[in-house]
Image (cartoon, rainbow, N blue to C red; front, top):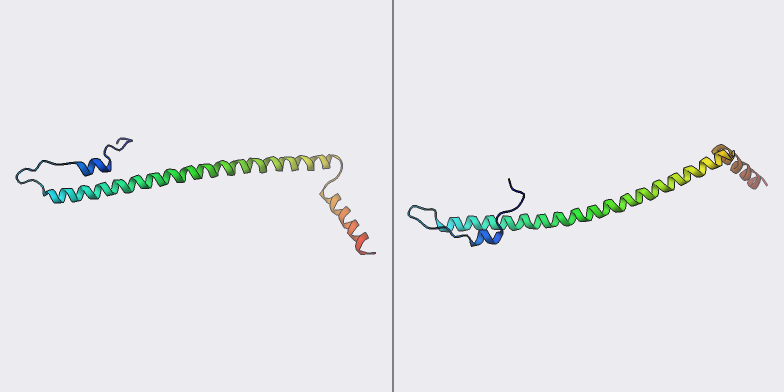
Length: 109
């Protein structure tokens, strides 16, 4: 099967067949070719719409990928900050204790 379309809608519409004795009815052949030509038009329109949608989705993937990269970079920065605080002797429980003590001092007055 070829990767390209051999006939266009116009090729189908313009095709004439020789009429012979005991041949096909010309009207039936023309009617059938008209249906085929309309199907070609429909397929072509669908292909164009799909190509447009693919382009939009590729742009969206690029945008989301960039957002993901930025988020990962932010998380790494936060992890580095947490590691630095831990090296300085501060951890989550120490911070919570300090906040708790500040709240007690503030609200018990």
